[in-house]
Amino acid sequence: MTAQPVEAAHDAPLASPAAAATGKTRSGAARIDAIDALRGLVIVVMVLDHVRDFFHATAFTADPMALDSGNPALFLTRWITHLCAPTFVFLAGLSVWLQKANGKSPGDLSRFLLTRGLWLIVLELTVIGFGFNFGWWIFLQVIWAIGFGMIVLAALHRLPRALVLAIGVLIIAAHPALNLISPAAFGPLEPLWRAMAVRGPFPTGAGLLLVVYPAIQWTGILLLGYGLAGFVTDAGGLRRGRIALLAVSFLVLFAVARAVNLPGLDPFPWAAQDSPLWSVFSFVSANKYPPSPAYVLLMLGLAFVLLLALDRLRGPVTSVLLTFGRTPLFTYLLHIWIAHALAVAVGMAMGVSPSAFLNTITDPSRLIEAGWGFSLPWVYVAWASVLVILYPLSRWFEGLKRRRRDWWLGYL
Image: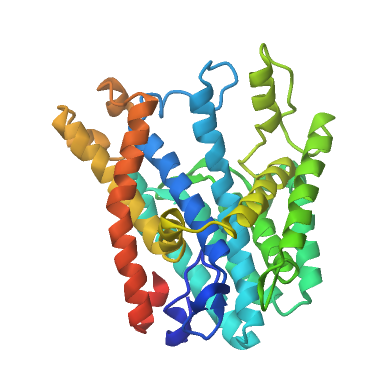
């Protein structure tokens, strides 16, 4: 967040305060509708993923992307949500460049990035983690990763953009080598290193901490977004030809390198399966935790394709996506609590004790014993229900941000 109340009122940690055909932000910069719509689309898809966590019958007992599950619909339901995190992180970096291009001074930008990054980490450790678990739990996910990346960029944005881009590419390409470093080598700083570079749970003095998004690896994607922002946008909006070039380049590079299982591309080589469909699934099943180079190429390549498509999309669907995309943090925070609360309400109606929904991540055994969960079609019904509840709230907040300039709006 930022100490500048006028600009802060439209900024959000996943937002891109750049520009668009529809008008100006409070800072005077135009907005690019397609960027907001893309962010809104991945929020909608992200809600599906988290609703599945709360409602699906095998959410706590099976891998939805297992190649031997025999359930293509479940695989695709989970696979498509892999688009969300890298797009969020990439657009966060892109938004920083757009603020700089729109005239924010280096000092103001550094303060903005530092305070916003710290605020996002605080939210991850409190409101977000508790909302997922309904119990105390340190759960480091995408908001933590964006917050850490913004703190890093608070220093790096003074460097030439091409150099920041090179650092981002280097992190993405070389970060698998971090696995060769033993966390124990850092002595008393081992917990800090694990949070930054190692995925997985480990005991702490105050309880259990789960690192889902190691910060260093995801910071590479944020720096990539910052570095490419000036290449894919200008004062007139999107540079469609350049975005198309990136989309083709990313997807072709992924396909060629993945076809030969290029060493270092992904920790899990693809292999032919019993059917052509599952062979394709194996091919596109790149590792997200942490993001492998294959995963970054595939998901950002698809994100560029969607960005081009959304640049031409108009109508009521676009309006909904824009509302979510212009209130990203507010919508993100709300959807966690709404989805979890809806699960509790439905569970109570079915005779499941509300206490079974407390500490669901740290101890899902009570829900499993109660036989909680639904088939995939009902998960989609629950997803639609959460979106219906979310939309008017996000719409209200979008209007509030247009009408008001209160400093605290910049923190939501």
